[in-house]
Length: 393
Image (tube, rainbow, N blue to C red; front, side):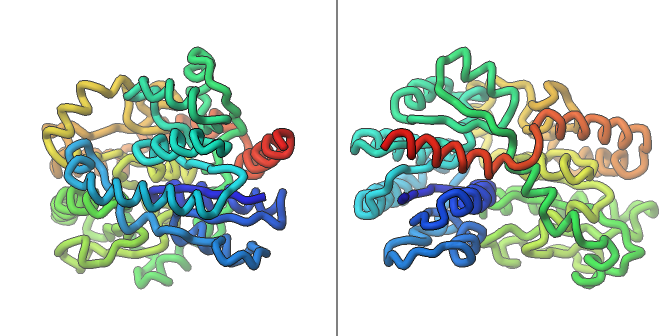
């Protein structure tokens, strides 16, 4: 069968790559065309059997990811061009199904268009309509043939709204458990990246979009300087996890005697760290599964975006792990008055040296993992998708 997959962000690329492994396992002759990144490309190169000239990567998501309400408006022309290019490409490829992964601002428009073309539409990693923009549910019900959700707290929400969904667990469990972070010795990893194993580590994750990096790096740089001045942190190295598609120049200037940027090793960095400061998103849930104490720090791209978000967002927490437990397993800093270097530094100090605080967080992490279901989610979702397509023929 022919599959067209659309992922618009780093997390979508990760989940898309694991889904592709499942699709190839269940349908070895699958012809897959996708908008994604290097992880999906790697799976395609390793597992695809097709000789079709129009299979493979159609568009690299890293060339145009945008965040924030105002920022979307400012980049409207570019986004519109990407949308039309995508429609033309899908039409030319003529897939049996269009599989959309998260990225709702773009993907819901594609869902509507694809449905009107008579194409089957699957949505994997549901739009966060339980957080804001609940009106999008009408579009999901109207234009999506099957929704594949990945969080247990989504089950009662979508059931209440009469959406046809499937829950097979969360694919991040497998992605983390099978990652190099779980297999590589910490000392060997630190030596590999040029850090003496005796050093202690604070991981800093600024996000994957260029705008996120520009927003977060001044906060992280000042926080690292505050902690480095504390005698208890003299032997710490602050490792910034470089995001896919970003260059070292994107991260600005910093004191490289105690601060370092490492690309392509995010999970290993988090796993090796005593604590982590993370810009929310999937990485925060990864840290919980890896067992690294964390604080989420998130800066909105503008005050206008911040105040709009305050008006429309309905959830108590911004982090997926906290949402799974419906309580604060770890602290979230996102207000303009608390997402500042001094507060972030204090929280990292507590994460490193308050043993009872760390212990309670690890207990909550165990509950988070249990809530996400067992292993094999990506394989199960792929199997369900293939079954749906086979039965509809």
